[in-house]
Image (tube, rainbow, N blue to C red):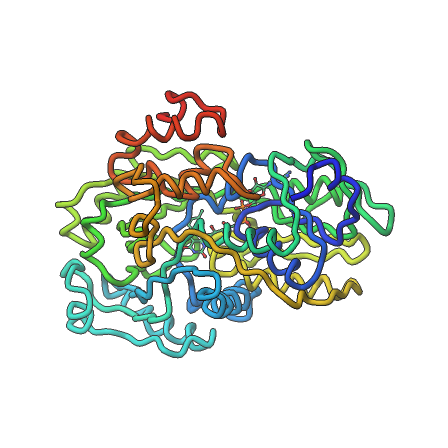
Length: 466
Ligand SMILES: Cc1cc2nc3c(=O)[nH]c(=O)nc-3n(C[C@H](O)[C@H](O)[C@H](O)COP(=O)(O)OP(=O)(O)OC[C@H]3O[C@@H](n4cnc5c(N)ncnc54)[C@H](O)[C@@H]3O)c2cc1C
């Protein structure tokens, strides 16, 4: 990766702002299409916004509004993910989903859910009777009445996935700068000059993928935004790995107008997840959990899967959706300014990111910009973290296990501290390796981790333990 000074002198084709899952997928797509790509991220590490905390479901789009941009991006993103996953060593937990009706009013909505799925090209859904549902998912409460089965809904890795997209972009030529907050920009009718906390850069086109700050970025560059972000928090409970065997499918509620509702599903790391809530708030970055909400999530979880009462909660977290006043994504191309705004990617961005990137590239081509797709594409070798993959702890020469709950090896920690996207924050290290994210929440490994990271992350051991 070139140093910041030499990057200042490159005339980039495209500057992508933000390294949430959307920015990472965008960087990958534009780079593979042959564009010279600069990526600017204000945080110390990638995935520091909305993409930090989600449910990690790879949606089919069965319930998206038919004909919406969201629906078509989910569908194309889903297909591309399944096409590229093996080459990129990305995992999939093929759980399928059940949209469960808990009363007669909800049962009446099931036909509509199947009809919408068909309208969205998802043909393999079917309604299950109580008996069929119980046979399929005996861990569910006996209060469940019926369900729509959606076989194609899967669980993926929320962090390694976008990380791999971005690493592939870098290994094929993209330049990524972190701690580079974009502050201002001027357009001279041909090129943009972007001012950031890491200096000035020039690029022909800007793609705003700033997630929770997308409208503010539009204000900076265009003087106005076509949408406003309305942050919507979602809190989660993570049950211990012992709970994962209670449920095979993703358990979805019959959705309402605002939210997909509280989901119970396995995680790719072997836990059981319950959440998210949907709480509108003003803050774009305050992602605290509160005990009252967690208590009601816990009670709801036990209503859905009664046996969860015998299992512990390992962790809690919250994520913030970049919702806007619109139901659909807000993707707007400003041809006169070489500027594309990719905003309001609220609840489905992990699934749709590859589809969004491909759609945006089409808009970009309408600016008259054409590149030659890279002929020999580099595929990165990223360490897998999913329970269903061959993990490093089972391979020789790994230096021993540091985090015993999540089986994270010394070699995995050391690799995360190296390379073009070396972690530079403790939260980044957690997302990159899962160290401290297990049952003891770092009680046993924080001291060793602190020692390993102290010089690289400029952390004291006590900070590492925090
Ligand atoms: C509770 C919850 C559950 C969800 N569940 C799912 C799910 O199961 N499946 C699914 O597909 N999707 C899910 N999602 C949705 C998905 O997580 C989001 O759609 C996605 O993360 C949005 O990504 P983004 O890249 O648009 O934004 P972000 O992740 O917010 O990324 C924007 C980036 O831009 C950076 N940035 C901002 N301003 C600047 C600046 N001035 N200069 C430089 N950088 C800047 C930020 O630091 C950030 O890193 C869920 C979301 C939440 C919150």
